[in-house]
Length: 207
Image (cartoon, rainbow, N blue to C red):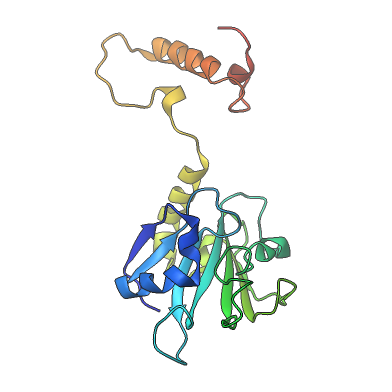
């Protein structure tokens, strides 16, 4: 396993073993295409049983959750979505290819409690060997020390917030943009974006 940068793919077919091995030659990990089912991050790895090729490639499949509903308790359905056949890593119709072991990880970043769990693997998705790891909370990662935890927490909270266009958070030089005007303009922006958030202003049906 080797990577020193990230590539966001634009085509989900690149997840397949036919293409994934080439990411190791470039030293890249994969951030998946938006809205791809099941997997968010892929770290390619090569088995030591042979030279790097599509027949020796496997991966660490990672799903990232920043919603607070995912906590210390393991949700096995998320691992089901990381089935290497469902995400396209292995091909059901490839008779010459034996499914390689995979590592499946779920990051429950917004969990209030930090813990690492290794749930029992349900291999109902065809026959393959998997090692499942549930990572709850930010401080479960060794690289996040006590001195750095506050910074990572700020980044997590920022990822949960919508953009600040409704509060006119952009920096503009406007002599007429006092607090009252900012509030009125923000209200009108919220009315234009009807039903996008749960604030009362977004639920008003008239301008």
